[in-house]
Image 1 (tube, rainbow, N blue to C red):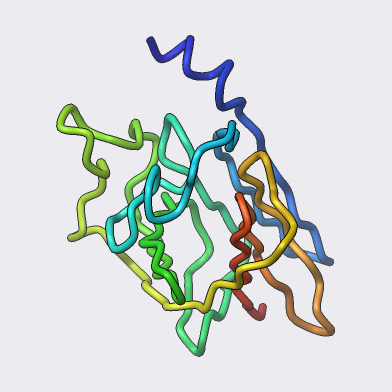
Image 2: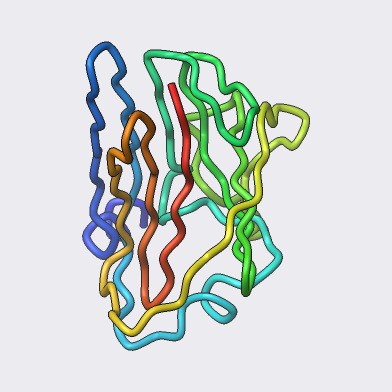
Length: 159
């Protein structure tokens, strides 16, 4: 079963490098395939593994600042709670687990959350067929950007 789902949601690792900072995000990239994504396939207000299959991992070689909160250098699982207008991003110290448990719920231990932040989402005309992470340099800072269907969420950070 796990091997079969990989073909539908291929693995990808995206790397952001800037001077002595390296960030790696490992995730699985599901396709839209004509489905209504946010609010339907991925419900609003419910913790999501932020991709498919395994929980998405986020690894940084330096401390990062998100809205004045520090995320220490290290490796984390990255979870989100999509909303109609805002998303909550959750960095959790546990990683390597399958993204959902046997009940189909997010396989995350809230006791191990190390940082949470809320970010506005943007609805646009362009449709992103495949779930995508990207990084963009913005002056001295950067943004982590998530795109799928018509939703785009940019998470600014400094380092």
